[in-house]
Image (cartoon, rainbow, N blue to C red):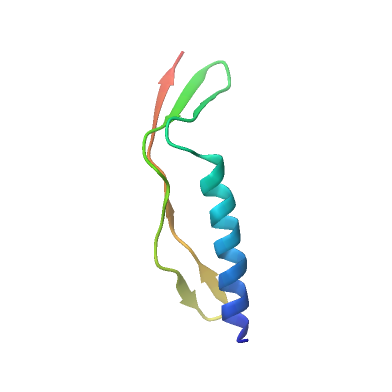
Length: 66
């Protein structure tokens, strides 16, 4: 298996973990700011550059000062 393919699998696993943490409607707060996830996270096509593999992840949110 090429090195980039192994990296791609590792990065995809991390992206899947992140997506599972931010379900639609998830509320996060620190007592000052409240943040609501307003869309399902989306993973875009990976980018291979030299010895790195990047996987763009988009996440929409709305924040309010409490």
